[in-house]
Length: 164
Picture 1 (cartoon, rainbow, N blue to C red):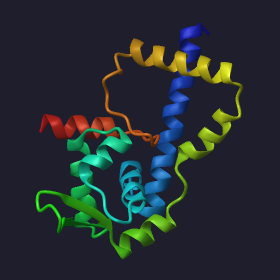
Picture 2 (picture 1 turned 90 degrees about the vertical axis):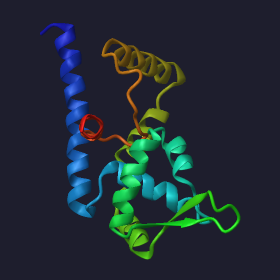
Picture 3 (picture 1 turned 60 degrees about the vertical axis):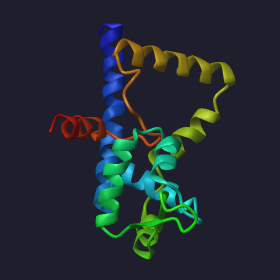
């Protein structure tokens, strides 16, 4: 097998692992990985947080985050409320139902990855980072929105929403 074939196979395994996690997460909680990530961000700010702050914290576009927030609000997992101090500002908070759903959710796939990655020597972490950045560049993927949560399918869904 050629080296590029081995590399592509390894990439497919990573994609498959994230896809399996996403399916398991959805089956167990009814949430997608971006929904879980947004719920975690809202829960981490008990005084409330704006949608733009959530988008910035999780490195997704404001439009993508807004669409996910709309779905979470429709499902009564989060609540939007105008700030009493600044009527232009809308803050998000977790509903009791959202808190229950978040408490029942498994830990994100990347938590185990982070623990293992941080266990590597600094030189090996740098080497892996440089290699993945190079792969992203070779795949013309540097400008694709990506959240900290590993999940497959959200990019394709974003493209469908943009095209429609």
